[in-house]
Length: 139
Image 1 (cartoon, rainbow, N blue to C red):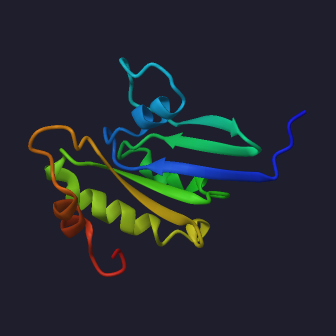
Image 2 (cartoon, helix red, strand yellow; image 1 turned 90 degrees about the vertical axis):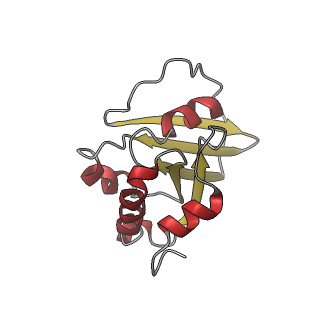
């Protein structure tokens, strides 16, 4: 039986269509040719070299966002996925992240901002995303 002294929970979050599920599937070496919107959540686990990583893939649709906080109880790292092609919702992206950072359940958790779809022509640059999503308390 495997013993895991090192265990961590990760929660990739972000607006719908940011690419969270595709990223998780790529990490798990699963097929990404047909990815559907995540309704609810999916848990994936990776066991490697004495470490266990639980990835909570939670849907990003507006109707599901109020439930996000229910999945952060033991989250060690919040991975915030930003769709670099979604210029129209960058303010919404910033506001949702700001709200999450106020969640008591995420106090002490690390934050990783993952800029996705940067290979698409016309996408926002890292500096554009940083400028658009930064407000007091987010820099």
